Image (cartoon, rainbow, N blue to C red; front, side, top):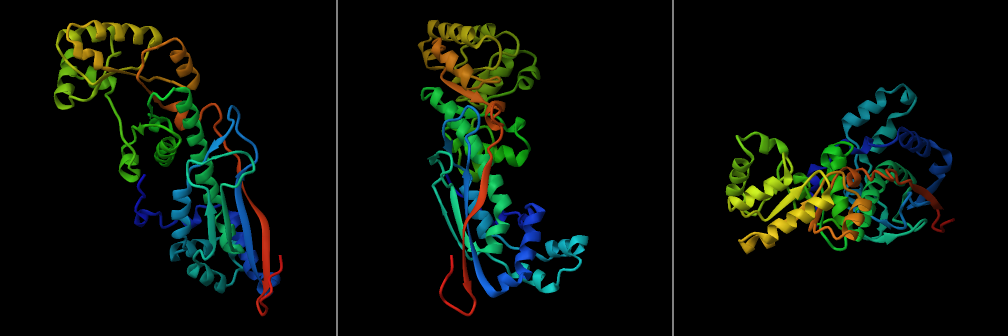
Length: 354
């Protein structure tokens, strides 16, 4: 997986934080204790309790965490905004000057993305001056919690699918465009073969997949014309065959000699239809249809996939959308970012006190 260009990093991301992180930063800055002592906070990010229906975690989100930390700065517009807030009316200018010069000077330790962890095992550890460590909390939790949640869901689906490819199809149901992008990334880390999210393909090097929508079929005079037009341009594409009558669509594909790489079933009784479609393709006089793959989609989850495979459905790949990109059955991961130790040292002495 390739890394994104950090030049695209949101220049206002330092304020993508809970407000109390900034008020605490001011509190640290002006306190006499922290003036007398050089204070380093040691924080660990971990999950106390697994979500419902999960027996492990697959960690994800470290790339975004590293990008955030590496590019953490405040700019003048952000400082002007903070100064405009009534709660900061008594804060002296030297605190704002401090923020304008602030960069991360601490250390980060983390497990590689894709690592399987269990409750109370640290995903990452920050050792840094207390203000720096504190200000990172919200963003780190946001990106690690979400991506680990989705990567874990993807892993569960992947394991149940018995090595059949799982494609992440959930961008339109994700909780916003950024969530869609990161869900695609996390799904790939969790074991998916690829995604329908084209931006994720460009930014992260994830294989992209797509077929066609019912609207494409309906825009033509007939279904067969739609198939021929698409096949002419994309000979290795998949044809959506359930717009009108799934089995009739397969029949005319064979009769017209259209040879798609695969067909997609998006509705109906997937067990019955997949068996009938496979039977029709294999029985065609042209034996090349035996190589035509069957993809299934349409509100799939691990339980449905498990039952389909248990009943010997001849489905070669599964496209999973809503259930995956929202982790619908367990949509929250309560990771925490806790100070586990503090190291203080008098600014005029060298012996640390822990």
